[in-house]
Length: 476
Image 1 (cartoon, helix red, strand yellow):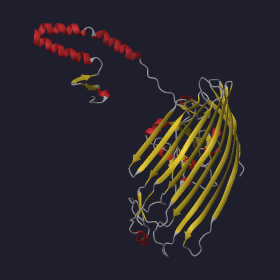
Image 2 (cartoon, helix red, strand yellow):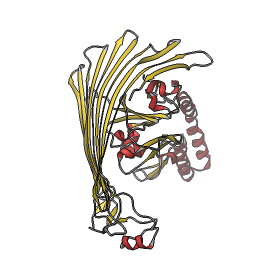
Image 3 (cartoon, rainbow, N blue to C red):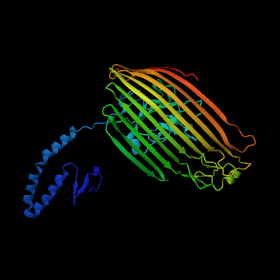
Image 4 (tube, one colour):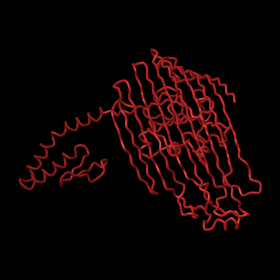
């Protein structure tokens, strides 16, 4: 039975203590033998026993030292796709932070908002709902989340560019790794990557048949259940995988008006992949995902009452910095549905690689918000509840060609097209004003076309000297 840490070199077998510091085990046993020799046969035989017994350990110590000196530590290579092709992290001329999927699972990092603690240069700005979130890299990002304002930090999942950051804020399943690219990346990732890129890669199906069930419980009656299965469907030709998620959380804010807990969530979703390899040169991957979320986050908690009248109307809730209570007669919550389908074709043309990615993504967001934060409507504090709907769709097509690796000149170039449109409706649900405002309706669409390319010359003094170009057409 183990009784101490391994770096202390102490363990217990049966009832005898031993030490693992090199050959000191042998010397400990030797000392015990010497003591017994002293008691039985006198000092002369004891010294003779010590001298004879010590001789065999000299070559053994030399052999151990020689063995330890020849041992080498092999570091696992980290592969990234920061340049739109798989390369070792050490050879990529881009500032990249990488978080592996195993580490994310071990630390229970389930979404984009939860990884900011592990990447110092990445910040996540939350809002009333997912459509009001944004990413910042090195302090640079887009504050406004208006439908007509595009982000400056791009989000890419399995090669598919997401037009809005709110599309990727829900749980991410089967993560292989997350790459955070710092600095302008507009050449390969488009005009919405002037501050950086969040590049997410999910796990590919494997030939080995596998399955798992992961059940987690946390305080506040929060639970998460994940189920996954995958393997070969046609040996060496077709393989697939699917993962499902069910999560719920009661919340940590009390509504004093009805006694219910808020600021919780209910989520369910699935992600599946099929990988078809008809021969050694062609690989086609079909991916689909669906995520539904119901978040009953309140429109903030009151931390300071500016007037005594408002403090009185807020009673029994006390406004202070430690407040975790609300008084609301209108249930603030957000309904999100995020779904998508993509197909990627990788074709080896000799030493060149031709890649085509075709994708569609849909996103529906409905937000119900209590603006007055009070349980009783009065003339001094009229009700200001509202409802907002967002319907977003995008189609994208990318075609790129990558040159052979290890050449004096390497390049990646291609074409990109995206058509995105969104409709947004804002409707006051209850407005206790003399002249309540009417519904708002907005529709926005745009077509984005881009020609991109990057070349790297592998010189002796500058092994990754890049030269890039990009042209874009973006009518609205």
